[in-house]
Amino acid sequence: MILTSKSLFPWLLIGSFIFFIFSQNSSSPPFRIKELKQRFNGGWKPGCDITNGSWVRDNGSSHGYTNQTCKTLPESKNCGKYGKKGDYERWIWQPTRCELPRFSAVEFLEISRGKRMAFVGDSVARNQADSLVCFLSETEIPKPFHKDQEDKFPIWYFESHNFTLMVMWTKFLVQGTEKLMNGSGSGDYDLQLDTMDREWTDRLHFIDYIVISSGHWFSRKIYLYEGGELTSCIFCSDQNVTNHDPTIGLQKAFKTTLQFLDEARESDQNMFIVLRTFSPAHFENGTWNDGGYCNRTRPFDESELSMTGTYWDIRNAQVEEVNKIKIASRNVKRRFELLDITKAMMMRPDAHPDSNWNNEWMRGYRDCVHWCLPGALDMWNDMLLILLKKYSWEMGNIEAERSYNR
Figure: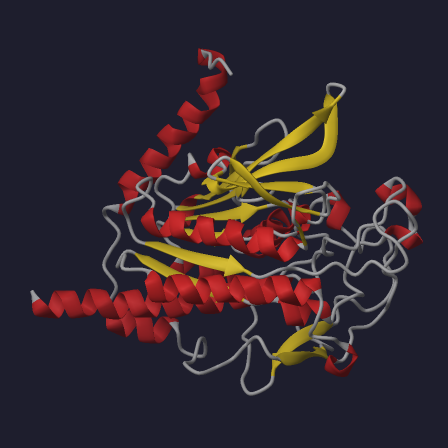
């Protein structure tokens, strides 16, 4: 591809903008223990397992935004506007042995003052970013700084907190190339498991918080390569090629990604890296466009779940890779954490924008992959704020100790 001054201009503009933000951060005040204690009062508590629990009825408290107050809410996730039935908004996640505080935009923006956050992944990662923008917009309306033609790399800037939020769209995290058939895309892919997708890694400069995720694009025919050599495949029937389920390829892709982020020369500052576990789909009797649907009207109980199968295997592989990098990493500027939402979201077959009740909205297909907003997915950002509190507390203690020893 030949780069022209016209094609480079948007990225030069983005680079200048991020450099400006980065230069503003040098004047940010250091952490102070007294402020930290005040900031986290009633928030994260050591030993609290927020991943195990149940969905309970919420008869009064607000999500913090509605489908009417959030002006950036995508039409495809605006289930309330198009008449989705059921009480999909009226449930909150209740951990078994502790509380999960509801999201506070004020707390989030204060913790994130002077920072840059990126959601890296597919359209479900964008789903979470849209929820976060809706939450934060209740406190401060962001300035949309950049929107590319396909809307895959949007940037929002919260000026009064000097906080930048962006999405970096990628199907597989690693490099994937669609195979062509008669000059058109075939839907099959070649995947280089040991090579990063530079579409997002080239934009990694100056990122402080990064939330990575992937999964649904692995459920198709994919040929897996390592060292430039074909090693195996997913959902193929080729002779002399070992066929795997999606878990094998996905786990290797996450391993490569976490190792890259641990060693990345693209970014030399502190970086908090969160892996969000697999978000399950709930199709019944088919898929997107062949009769599948998800028209249930209440959450599952834990007794209705089966902790087996591909979804749970993918989640376990992701947990394994995060645990491995935590042990292996020697980079004091990197912190890795898990945003484990799989079990909670396996219980929410009622919370997708399935078009069974309004076929004109989705124009012929059923969406049991993405999530209504506001709704169950907002809990991911409740959890994300808890992880940020934990990270900020740890970094604050480190900074205080350094100051004390000077």
